[in-house]
Length: 249
Ligand SMILES: *Cc1c(COP(=O)(O)O)cnc(C)c1O
Image (cartoon, rainbow, N blue to C red; front, side, top):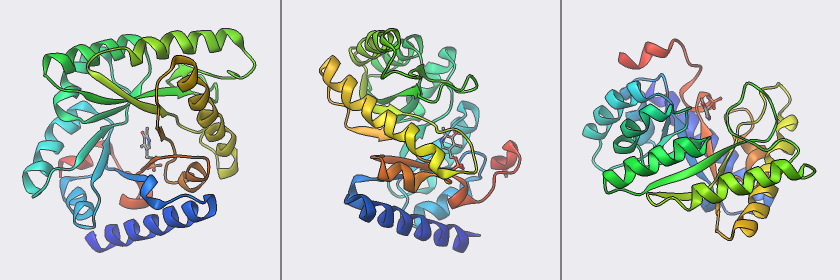
């Protein structure tokens, strides 16, 4: 098992390097987050042994057990990224477990996380999740057609402006999920739109938003070509996810 995970990580790193070369970027500019949701602690240990320093999880309950388990077995700390939808009432539980939250999709959630971070004397790195594609099934601050829709732009300025001003959060950039399709090229305009939106809003609200969290197993090379600085890769490292409860093994 661990040989496979190490092999997969080597292959993903080669693909990251190739995409960076195509885009004229340095691989140092792209952080690989191994998305370990549903997988047991042993698999995370194998990934850490292969050099992974960033892990992504999406459920508070699973994380509250698995993160301390893994951290206790590691010699050095790794960085934990919450990438899944967070309910406002779980904000308090997220703060002690995670360094970074990628899935801030409402001002209300941002406020709860900021408050919990302040109470814990911690600064939480944060990404605002943006729904660029307009799919109703996706969370994220609405940004469909932002280039042509003044109302959408005004709402983005208001929401993002309020979130970046919250003490307790350090907003690093924007995150999105591309539509699920078999055609990786279908993701490209979504990633390009997020990158353009980042440039525009950073200037408009006068903050630096250096990071773009975009790209998963099927589309991370395209995301890197469009400017991703963090890619969230699960299946290409750990294999297909079986049942959610697998991690209890
Ligand atoms: C599960 C998940 C990923 C990883 O997806 P894979 O297709 O397994 O690479 C990335 N981002 C988010 C938000 C996820 O929930």
